[in-house]
Image 1 (cartoon, rainbow, N blue to C red):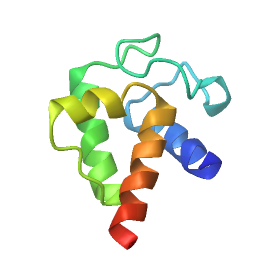
Image 2 (cartoon, rainbow, N blue to C red; image 1 turned 135 degrees about the horizontal axis):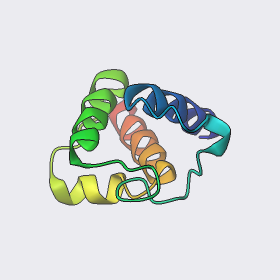
Image 3 (cartoon, rainbow, N blue to C red; image 1 turned 180 degrees about the vertical axis):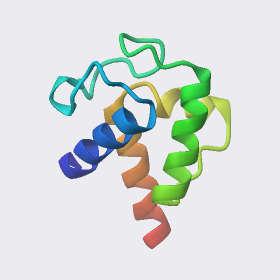
Length: 88
């Protein structure tokens, strides 16, 4: 799980061009959307596409998205759970 979190930090920083922070500064438990990072709804759409493309995991409704993008830790947990379920 730790590796996935670190990978997601790098991908999100690059995807959203968050030049003011590094992976070390990225608190995985901090609020992801609407928090200090300034991530908005357009950024969320970009992250949804990245998650679907890179991890094969769909986030197909707003209710799921709100829970999944609550924090980086919740996003990583969702990806890991969905991938495990798909492999079973």
